[in-house]
Image 1 (spheres, rainbow, N blue to C red):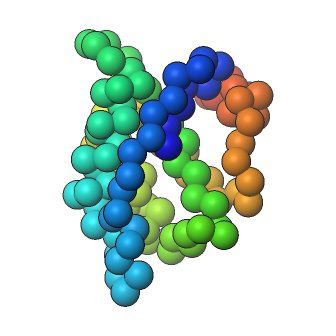
Image 2: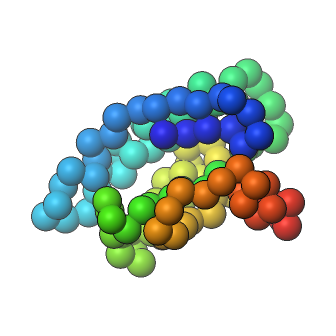
Amino acid sequence: MGRVVGEDKRARRDCYALDNSRGDPDFSRVRETLSSLVKELAPGFSLRKPTALLHFIPEHYRPTQGQLELFKKTAERSGIALCWLSKWETANTDRELANVFRAL
C-alpha cells in the first residue's frame, strides 16, 4: 500500500513477490509494483523524485539485513530518490512521517 503524507491519496497493489518463503523475494516483481505505485501517487513529469519509507511490520514479514539492502536498491531503481526502511511494530502516523521527512 502506498500513500502521500498529508493528503488523502492512497493506492494499493498486490505483490506476491514475498510469497517465496524458501528464499529471497522476487525483486523484479517488487520493482514493478513499486514503479506502479510511484506512477499513480506522483503522476506526471517532475525533476524531483519522491522520498519513500518502506515499512515491514514484523508480525507479517521479517526481512534479513541483506534483503533490506536489496529492497532499498530496488525502490531507488523504481523512481524513488531516497528510501527509508522501517521495521517498527505498528504503522507510522502522518505526523511521525512528516517529522522524519522534515528532518531531511
